[in-house]
Image (cartoon, rainbow, N blue to C red):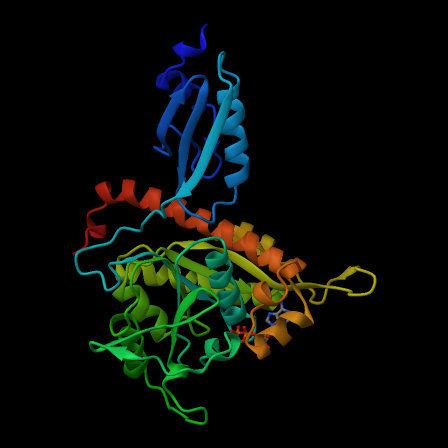
Length: 370
Ligand code: ADP
């Protein structure tokens, strides 16, 4: 076959052998392949992924290159990897019409590292190229300002609060608006009103991901968020103890109950295990700190994805207190790597759910919105 006879169809047929491992379909039928150009045996095309934080970006690029190189007459292959973040289904009255994915970070109880995880995931997603917002909805104890190292007062333009940007993430927290020593006695309707305001009065703008740090447990803030916005889903942070497992199980059950009551899907995007063993800084040996079967076991039992574990590391605590998240302060550390991998696994889950969502939308009448 002469090199001039390479056709776009041949290139596309070759690329059908490349399958997205999360979406279980080939990249051609998924519509990922764009702008195929063939010139004198040199083939160039784009692969547009569903998230810039795609965990299999490099693998797909090399598989696609190999598949096309095997065509007779092909001299070179140039693949450009791009991304357009898939969107949840946005209805006419959605409070966040310009936000593609809304992910709530929850825990059954306080102190498991939920805020630490929310902050590091938000920054990791931004480092991977996504446009990220971070909403601190933990109104009882907003810790995002401390962990992100800023106490600026957000400006107000045209009656909208402009989020504060740090480490590539635009964020909003009640902590920016309340004086340090203020004590607020929260009642249910106040929590609901405040969370609604943090959604509507803030200029969130175009975002790929909005990460929402919920208060521990499933109370008024979780209900208001899920009522106000069709969220992509929830991730649950737990420590490896059995008690934490019981509590995480309760959180999953409560979100499932909320889903029934609100008649709106609230998918559990996965479980994250935090403080899952101590790596000795001297000898590297990992010691289990908590007794218990761990989050992987919990995820299997609860039939939800396990997104990964983050080791217990004094640096995480120090960087949190100093206002520099671990993924920025120690980007090469094991825990930063863990946060990046979990951010990618989470982004993959968002893509999976958005695909499923679009299909489901046609079939389930109660999901009609607007
Ligand atoms: P929560 O939001 O669940 O109440 P935080 O994120 O505020 O928990 O974390 C509680 C404390 O634990 C903070 O001091 C934080 O720095 C620390 N911490 C969280 N995760 C880790 C970890 N993997 N290793 C060491 N310290 C951690």
